[in-house]
Length: 129
Image 1 (cartoon, one colour):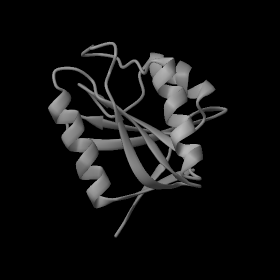
Image 2 (image 1 turned 180 degrees about the vertical axis):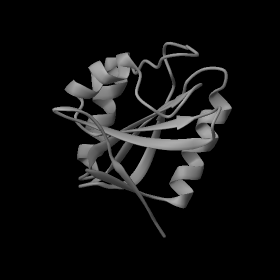
Image 3 (image 1 turned 180 degrees about the horizontal axis):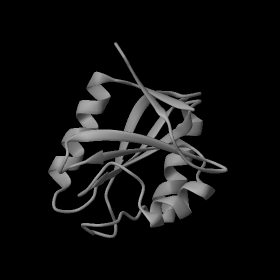
C-alpha cells in the first residue's frame, strides 16, 4: 500500500503540524486511488498534545465534500510529539479506517506512513512533482 503526495502538500502538512503546537494537528487527505489531490485541514476538537479528535459531523461533511468532487478520503494525517509511528489508540482507529495514516513527528521533523492490513504495516510514501 502506498500514498502519493506532492512536496507542496507535505510542506503544507508540516506547517499545519507546527502551527498546531503544542497540540496534535489533523487533516483528511482527499484524492483518487492512492494519490492525494487535496489536503483538508480539520481542527483537533480534543485540543490535546497527545491525541486528535475529528467530530463525527466534520468527518461526514468531509466525506460528502470528497464525494461531490468525485474523490475519496485516501488518507488521514495527524502529528505526534514523538516518533512518526502509530500509537495504540491510532492502531484501534486504523482498523476501522483502512486508509493510509500519515504521521508527522514534530520532534523528529519527519513523516511516517502506515496502514492496517491484518496488522499495522508501514506504507510507502511517494513524492511526485
